[in-house]
Image (cartoon, rainbow, N blue to C red):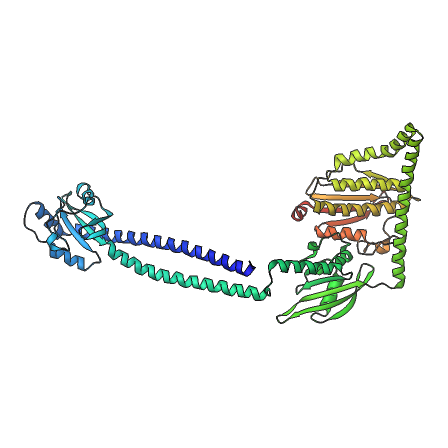
Length: 534
């Protein structure tokens, strides 16, 4: 069944059910209200007549077997009211008046008269008499504090039913009009939906969105779509990698201002709103070219589509290729190093040098025990703990002393938060290891790490024995592409990524040169902000 048919049937069925329930409730309440109104009006009229001196004298005369005449007087009152009948009885329930004169002097029909005669109660009841079924309202007649008779004011059910049917008709007509208006609204909504979605089913539309997302992600150029308020509406993987090296997910960008991730690109779009234009902008030291396409509709400007790509000349491309080759060689050398260790261990086992093999394994593992114990006891987050162990291994390979503060304590966090903590700590440690190793001629290379979340903040501190940040880049060290490393390396990314994540959590990052001639980077994150993102 198509969506519009399903929605139409469901809505009509729901509306019909609601109308039926509401109509039934209204009719029930109307009937009760009408009956209560008749009872109240009848009791009030019966009470007034019961205090009429003419009525009291006539009933007293009847009780004393004296002459009386009350028929015309009561009938005159009845014709001026909406009552179906007014019957006056003496203490023996004998009629003194009746709409049909021949029934005067006969006994009242129905046992519901006796509570008024015997106990002096005022009440209403529904019963059948000589004129038919009616709502009957009783009031006692008192004289000198004693009950001498009673008044019965009746409203025939046939008459009240006619009145109710008239009211039901008016209410039913009103409900019918409302129901038809509801059906008309449903029909209009279905046609509007059909025209808006081009008669496509939701599954088809969802698949189309997925196809478009896959097509965007397959394009190597970076693509971003922003709305009229310069908030990111769509972004592909290439743009994510260029802006933050992929550390943030797609939905970390959507609905956030473009200026939060690239102020120069935001300014470029705002420079010529509503028209196609081209321009250049920087992310750190890297240059990019951008084509900005306006998204115009009959209703006005909806936003812009931005396509940008790296603006590299031949020498820069050659540098990128050289870096990739060097990185490949580094990985190959590490592979050979571990392969040689495995070959040594294999040779010892083959020549039955078991003690030497055990010593060789023990030598490789002893140095891990203290650091592993420290990490296990102080860091509950498995991802961060694994990272610290890996960085310890890396430090050992390049000859840098790696220590973790004995006061370190870090709880476990959800995967989404844990991954971002790993990125921040990992990049800080990588920079610290490289800085310490480059300054090993002047000072013993060392990296010290401190992590804590005991208070309302998460504190991440990494201290190294490097030469520090050159003065000419101190104000730009956190920008993309800015680095104190060699120019032929792919650098200036780590601290930029850290700064992006710190801003993502609305935290702060500081660095200083200590009195011990070390460089200390510190990150402070509010745990309440972390919980919100969690």
